[in-house]
Amino acid sequence: MTTRLIGIVVATVAIAAFAKPAAGQALPRTADGKPDLSGIWQAVNTANWNILAHTAEKDVPAGLGVVEGNEIPYQPSAAAKQKENFANRATADPESKCYLPGVPRITYMPYPFQIFQTPGHIAITYEYVHAVRRIFMKESHPDGVEWFMGDSRGRWEGDTLVVDVANFTDQTWFDRSGNFHSADLHVIERYTPISANQINYEATIEDPKVFTRPWKMSMPLYRRLDKGMRILENECYAFGLEHTWLKPPQ
Image 1 (cartoon, rainbow, N blue to C red):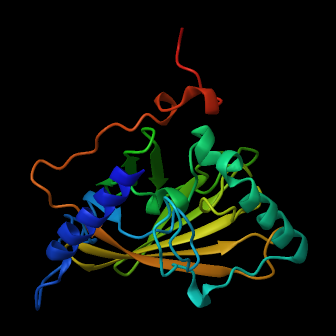
Image 2 (tube, rainbow, N blue to C red; image 1 turned 120 degrees about the vertical axis):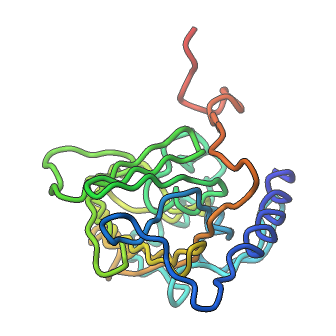
């Protein structure tokens, strides 16, 4: 854990140095004129520990939070459930079981991800447990299915990639602090490039079973420009099999 925290600090300094937009810098674009989001990106914050503002604790770095207004509008029964989740977070957090972390959480886990972009299809590959998202640009959501990562359908609004994500399970959390949702979760993501090396990321959250109203989180994403940068492997189940549901082949 200490090594991971040190890595985050080092990455913050390295990424920030490259992320400053140059004056008059034009956005890279694809052949069809859309912003080219291709490349390796990473959020540099502590939202995976807690999406709200929080102080430092053992193995938990302090953070300013990413939720607008620093408040999650839980229904009373859901607020009680969140407190129960927090009390049992060491083993109840789906991340501790090596589940796919869901959306938007996978975006701000402390690992990079890579975007591959075509006019009709955008794919995102993540370092964490080889997770993959496919964002289809022309089809609608299918009926009667659910996934840990939800089902992603995209469109462009000017220079902003808007991704409508639905068909979730209730088996993921927003962070390690027990903030949760039901299977009725609906997420609208917005990826707006600020410069060639920075994206403003927003996620609007709706879930009428858990929250009293929609709410939003936002954060910058930075392009990783490290020499030889690539997505590596992070096989969660290989680190402490006795605590996970996933077992390797015998």
